Structure formats: C-alpha cells, structure tokens
Image 1: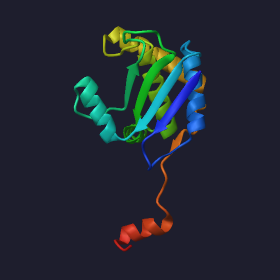
Image 2: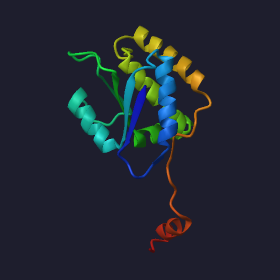
Image 3: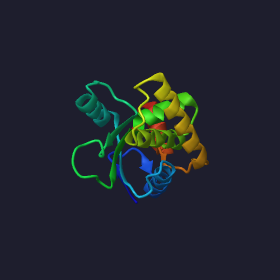
Length: 166
C-alpha cells in the first residue's frame, strides 16, 4: 500500500507522515489495504477550478474524489485521488467546533468512501448508508492525530499589524 500526499499550500504545516498513516488506516478499514491512494491538499482557488472543470459547479468545495477504477482500461492499484481544500476544512472545523485535524480526517474518510462507490447524492438512503459508514470508520481512528496546524503570526508581526506599523 502506498499513500502519496501532495501539499500545494504554504500557509499550513501538514504532518505528512501522520496523514499518510491515517490514510493507510482508512484504506484498511474499507478493505483496500493493498490499494494506492493520492491525496492532494489545496487552496480554495485550485479547488474551485477543479469543481468547475469536473462537476460544472463554479464554487469551492471541501473534498473531491477522482476514482481510477471507474475509468475504462486495466485495473490499477491506484484507488484514486482525494483532493481536500485546507481553507474550507479550516472554516468548517471552526463552524462545527472541531479541530482542523478532525475535519481533515472526516474529509479523508468521506473522499475514500466516494472512491469505493459510496455516493450521498444518489438518494437519501445512500446518504444515510454513507454517513453510517463514515461514523464507523471515524470511531476506529480516534483519537485523531495532529494532521495539520495553521501557523500563527509571530508576536512582533501580530502587534505591528494591529497598529498599522511595520
């Protein structure tokens, strides 16, 4: 099993080894322990472009999943790509009273389940089925390790920004 993590942001410190280990646990939980997974952590601009290009929705979203096994051709070891918007995850975490790491873990599980054929947009029954599966997997992942932290401005810079001086 191989998990590839790509970070396209500079304003977030991602613990890639922790993210990779968590993704391996998620793959094992869905019965895909031998599969490969690509995770792309992006900003809202890139996520909006991807959502517009592939789903024809001109807005950012929290997670997109691109399944490799749905395409024609030979079966690949690569299950697919999960793309997560860090800024959107941060906003949702704050709104939901969760840590950024908990939100990222949920988005990862959600994306992987999409790669495995779950689709909450098909019907209410499918949405309930997917939610139950998400909750069951998340329960096995607790406590969620620290996956990412948003760096704070240094004390000097933060003070100078408040007064307008640099």
